[in-house]
Each structure stands twice: as C-alpha cells, then as structure tokens.
Image (cartoon, rainbow, N blue to C red; front, side, top):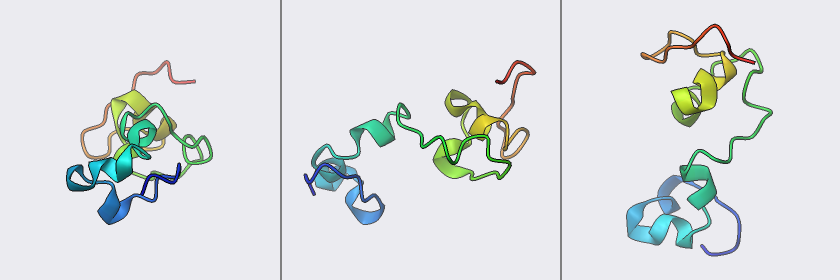
Length: 72
C-alpha cells in the first residue's frame, strides 16, 4: 500500500483507500495496459466497458458491451 504500484485484489477497495491512492489511475480507466486492449482476446472485467472500446473491440457484444464500427 502506498508504494506507487497498484497490486489490486483485496487492497484495491474503499476500506484500504484504494491502496492508498496507488490504484487511482487504474480505477479511473485512464490507465489501460495497451497489451490487453485489441489483442484478439476478450479480457473482460475492467476492459469490457465502452470507455475502453469494449477491450479494443475484443469484447463487442459480450456482457452488453456495444461497439461502434469506428473502433481504431
């Protein structure tokens, strides 16, 4: 906690201050590792949201995530 790295799991919760702020970027969806987005695999979870382009198009139509035809 508060070491500059988001470990996630049980520490990335409100009770732990979202790891003392270490997970703020991750939780805001502003930080999305590009290696997971658009890699041909639906990673789901935090990547399968419209803000992440339904995992760069990998999750189009999965769990209600809808994609436009204008994805990069």
